[in-house]
Length: 108
Length: 118
Image (cartoon, rainbow over all chains, first blue to last red):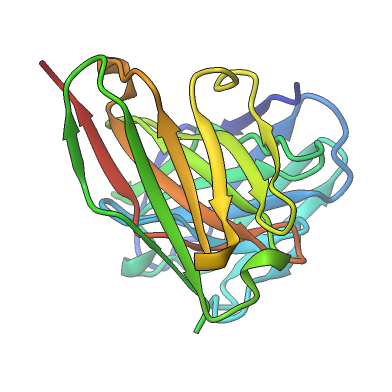
């Protein structure tokens, strides 16, 4: 099975900060990597698919990069509504789409 | 609008059976995979399995194989997740989500909270 790790597990940041979250796969997954945002009490929301493609309706301050085993999600200027938990997910394994453990972004 | 609507919260006793549902609308239900995800209280997202309603092809995460059954009734555009004998450790929020052509999952259902307690 492909294992996913994320770092950091949590971070504190201020509005306007640039935030970067890292996701690593236990083996190469090419660009088959998705990013989700989850707010408390809500379902996850797809932000980025195929490592770097922005889902329709998602603000352009979100961006993704990477391929192979190492990926990043960047929020260029953190907004109040961005405080949430972020998960990566690999979609490389046939129909076994494991998630990373999550990164919680809260207010400094 | 593409939408997944899940059935309501459930409170069950250990050993009881349960079937929760996820109804799709606004798209061709038989043409997209539907996945199920567990989120235990205060924890992260866990991939459970996936079904293709067009032919009921189903795959399970090894962690959930034999523990749950995923099915679908394409005549009513509904996918299901069921347990034959619930345990307290099945207490969690369960989400369904549609896999798009991008291989990302969107949209998601609103979630069904399952509470198992004696």
